Image (cartoon, rainbow, N blue to C red; front, side, top):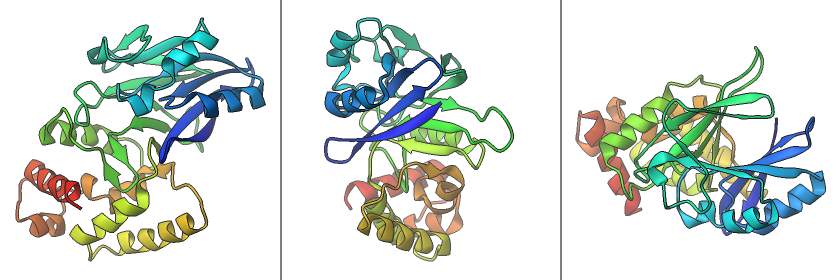
Length: 257
């Protein structure tokens, strides 16, 4: 399975999964039609599936247009999103599995950003390979999604599921927010040398016009304040020793940043 990162809208990423053996493709969260069609044309591939993480328009915006062009596609989404994802055929719950290109992804139920958000985790198949997590707007490089429909406790639980994955898991999040996320992170975790180094690296990368996605879970655990609610320094900053309250206060600060 090859993964192609496609730019969309102002800062979205669409991920196109490609199976060279069958010359078929699937897309994760197709925000726009044009970048998907351009890549499919380049690959001369047939689109057979859409993996949606949640219902927001910048993740499902091209669903109906793709349905018209590829009438046999299957559209996957969370069971709790019934009626909110255009064309949804398959209603997934935690622990369900989906297959593409000989790989099997486990579905995680990760509410918080929305009440119905899911993620798709393709584990490594053999030693030396990495797993791939398509997490929509739940976890970002250096940040996490706003809590539009969920609670801090739900989001901590969701992020805990992600945090428990292998450290070398690649995090395919849906937005290029990393530099601003790390600017904020430095305001709540300023004495973190890993964070300081990452900020300088990301700043240089963005100045060169390079993408910062995918990220690596190991790096997120060291530098992302939204995975570090148990760290004493972060708890001291927000004046709380409770993990969920620590997360909630950091999220509130980010909302105002």
